[in-house]
Length: 261
Image 1 (tube, helix red, strand yellow):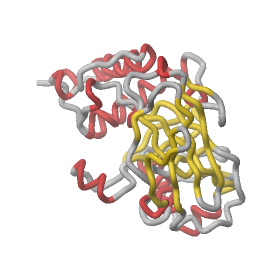
Image 2 (cartoon, rainbow, N blue to C red; image 1 turned 180 degrees about the vertical axis):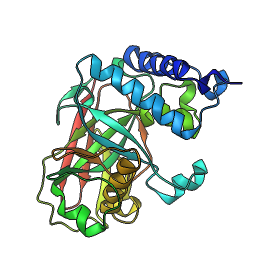
Image 3 (cartoon, rainbow, N blue to C red; image 1 turned 180 degrees about the horizontal axis):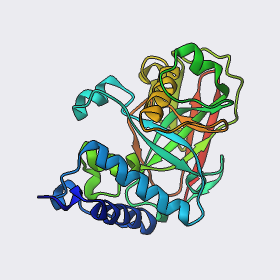
């Protein structure tokens, strides 16, 4: 029987994944180590791991959504999205630099970000989700699984904060744009490496925001005013390479960019 069935071992697993992220050292998948976690337990490990970050002085500033494309849900054999907290120490200054030494095998993906002007939690309509938004912006998320070879089960990735490792946000814009089908081009040193549309995010990124409120409510939590919500990737992720300028050009919203060193 897996030791993951007791509270003490959930704390030990949280320490394991937190240390892997903090020290940028890969570990074997929890499932490969004989840890048979339920999804509920995986989120508990995530909570405990993020709590360790908070105890070191980090502050939660929002959440990221994952598996927001139907193709990804089918690939992973799931019927719902996953999510994980964002902290201030994960933030990469827009136009600034980030070192690969922070990560193990990082990838970057283009996203849409929301800034909330009122709390959200539980089942909300699309209109209610839209009414809670102060601003929208193009964004880039760095994902970096702490597991060997970027391989994991659903429970593994949830326990590992859904691979979320860094993010940058372009200039905030008024939330009156139609976000349903915006062209999004991610460039490395001026060359397009991923091309997609915001429609890949549940058909409309606002649907991801409504889902974020729902999953937060199901976890007994509220997304407070001032929270940032990353709605999910519009394309596949691209492996990060040294000495590279990464830029997202999003139709109608502008750009988000940073430099890898």
